[in-house]
Length: 290
Image 1 (cartoon, rainbow, N blue to C red):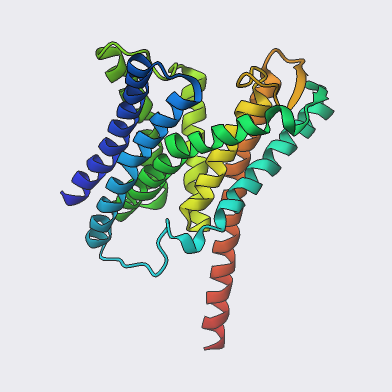
Image 2 (cartoon, one colour):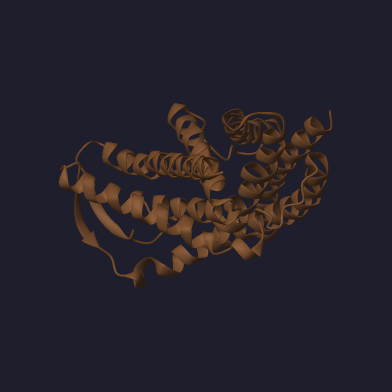
């Protein structure tokens, strides 16, 4: 029964944090006439300020429940170097996506814009995305929620359960926002659902083989910035990193998104299978020698 309470506590903390974060931004806009990045930064500070310390508090209860005291915690600063692992993996997969789409003629790259056009906007958005999305979501979902589920279920069921709970967060928050008269934060449709489901699986598998939430934070953050400043051509009032013509009426961009997310799943599964093969080979060798 305790594991169910912890599961509900973790999910509720993230859902409430997301709603209160969006609410704080709306109040700041109405009462203090702030908008744009200032509004988003307020939302991020409120989100992380509520979710991060609460989840860290509950995490101690998770370790008591599972009767485990790992030497290196999944959110430990000692494994922060895996942040670079997540960043590089997302960049490599996105680059492959652009290269393949370009060679196939699905997109035609027209112009690369120098960093002075977009770098400042990207850095500001990275800070906001870290506070409002990547850090609290990874700590709560790929961290605490998965660990509670893994305590009760086999790995694939825990991954599936975490992913479904990940999807439920924006759906529930949208309903709460509509109930209190706020504009919904997301448009829930079939493409959005498919992306969220695949993204949740991708991030969880990445956490499993790196044993670090910093890898998922890095991947999550890099995916968001690539989506917003490279794949999306609308930009944040600045030119994108590159301008391209999508010959497939938007499907070229979809392919690149798929390359990042599905590619991340494939790479993670390959590494997990390889590690399992090496582990079995090592055990069989030791058994033979004994």
